Image (cartoon, rainbow, N blue to C red):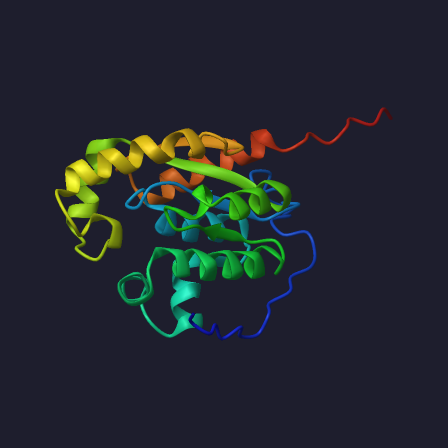
Length: 205
């Protein structure tokens, strides 16, 4: 079992995203958790979305690596997937408790029952859904995906998609993203979140 360096908690208060001078920007009341397959662009879209909303951004895999002081690939290789998922649950729980933020999840995080229930109870979940062929093009550029290392990457990706997509579909929102500029995909996500939030009641004057 790997010991995790907890680090300094970053508790956040206040109405993030509230900007009276910009009607496009709104107030979040809970964290936004981006989920989806490896190569979907969750990290790049997440950073851009956090900038648009003026809230902190976290990447769960990056936070796990910082806490464990080794890479995700090393954790998988040396300790196995079960140990990685244990660490992932612990880190994601900490991040979701830190306040309003945008959090990009690893591809398998939402598949874990405990993590999924925590996200459903504490965050707005958004599935960043990307076409299979675009996913395959992206993951082939990077040879460090632990679950695609053994066997044919295309077959592995198809199998993982088949297993995970029914669970991803439990997310609060599903946003189709493509290879357009990251900022455009982030704005698409922002607009969908804005539409999904409860509307403020109109008070008669």
